[in-house]
Amino acid sequence: MWTRQHKQRNTGRLIIPSLCVAFLAYFGFHAYHGEFGINSKYQLEAQTVALQGQLDAIKARRMELERRVRLMHEGSIEKDMLDEQARKALNLSQADEITIMLPASAK
Image (cartoon, rainbow, N blue to C red; front, side):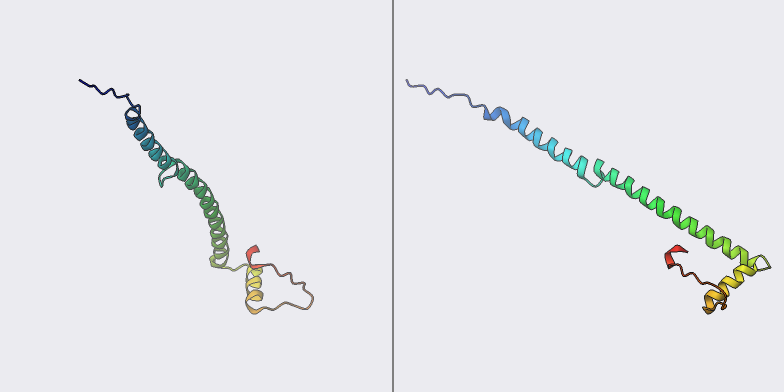
């Protein structure tokens, strides 16, 4: 009677560990680069800092505008404020005055 002798192959032992490594790599990649991952957390923090800076600038501009409105509504308008607004609206100045033009962003 003849018997066949087969050599044991090691490939069967590597299937489950290789599948585990593939799943861990997939989930690890998405844990870092995904929508709610570590990288997006840092991007959201940077965006938060930038937007907070914009909010502070807008609040400062609003406080300045509110201060100027308060000066006009207290019953007596300051003469300097009235003069400034009138000259700006009418685009006039006197002959002995020097006019300094500022860019619109410097207001």
